[in-house]
Length: 141
Image 1 (cartoon, rainbow, N blue to C red):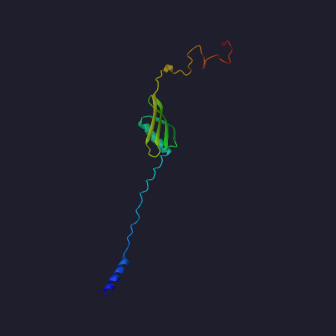
Image 2 (cartoon, rainbow, N blue to C red):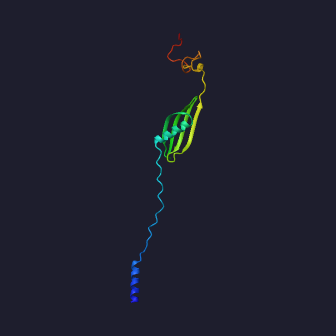
């Protein structure tokens, strides 16, 4: 009877053995989604911010995105006594400022006497251009 009991326990034990299976290991986490690209309005707003940081008054000239995911934003820039342009380049995804082309130069001071609209101070030349007057007789007057 001991042998039968022993065989019975062995049979029960073999039937009750549960094979533990580990769940499959998860793979590496998926990469974070690529940030969204900067929009036209965001590129222009960032450009105006750079313009204000340089203490210029700016007027938008052009803004476009190149095939290399770069926003090029161009402004007419002015400051008291100076004017020129400010061109900026931003990375469309990282939003980093990549390049600045700033050409704002002081204007020449002009005397009020030099502000002559017709520029014909020379008595020998009348009107614009040089050479013979066309459509007039040989002896005007």
